[in-house]
Image (tube, rainbow, N blue to C red):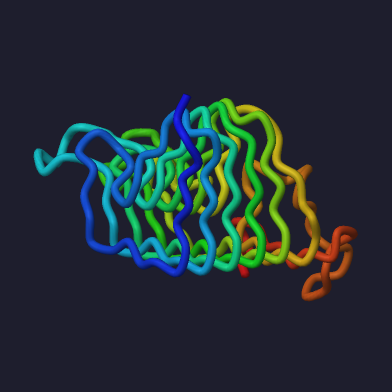
Length: 193
């Protein structure tokens, strides 16, 4: 068993992960705790321009995690999850910002410019911005959140730019410009926020 990993008051910037996890790759740790930190300008994918890799900012597998008061911005992945790729893990994101990340620049069918949740047990998101991310894959249809397994739940007060792939979890408001039933502000592909 691995121990707990704590990333506090840190900036992880300008790194490349050839196999994934441009900023950091965490696999099988007892827990990952990130607070008051920034993952920026990291990239997942080798320099060959062809091979896919996931998790530009952060790749989390088989590790419970919490991300609080942190920013994941300007990261990219040649595969899924420009900002964050999560698989077989349970997590919480609160009071954080996931923006300006990109996935799949070669447009070969990957998703989740901001977050890719793949075979995820559970993710709770509260007081968090996930917006203005891009996804070139499959028509660019899941730019902010890509849900490919497991469940995601709103803890309220989120700003979700485009809810494509998480429409049930982050429904549109009854009146545009107002919060939805969970007190989240939510946009869609036709009118992202």
